[in-house]
Image (tube, rainbow, N blue to C red):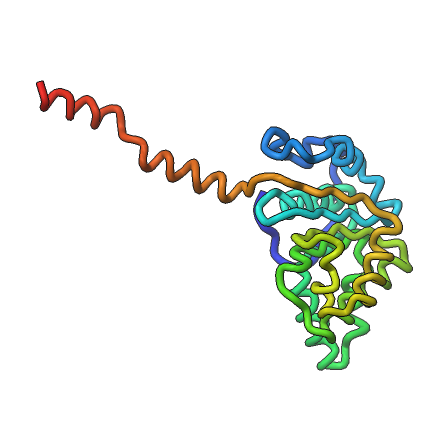
Length: 218
């Protein structure tokens, strides 16, 4: 599944097909994932209940893959979805504040049925950016809007995410975790695994080359 551009997923109603097939995962590669949780997410109930889906784990284990699948599934249910990274959202909000249109930009992130915030914690926000992202989280919580969020940081490290402000981080987590499904993915990075497999393929001698070498020795 490809990485989507930041922005709005337009509703695309389709025949009901809310099955696990919409969220393809390599279960053997990530045995630590609770399959029952993913199957429950595939029903789409979290969207109507305004739940947060928090996907935690190191880089490359499939967090964004799963978040995109949830976004596509929600769009296929006929709902508006907005996908962004945490840093991109912070930059857009900061720019909107400078241009005196912050209220409109926050509404762009609050109105969709599902907001996906990717890469929370990969890049540290400054104090102003952290405050703006918190406003979005808080307003979506008050309106009962679902959020799907990916992060490489444990909850104990979220003070770093919010510019070192432990109070703001705690307030954000309080809202996100009140109605939530948390999936902690622990496993090997798909990218590193593919790179290692590719390296093995390059270093493995070709059968034909070995045969030619044997013929020359005879």
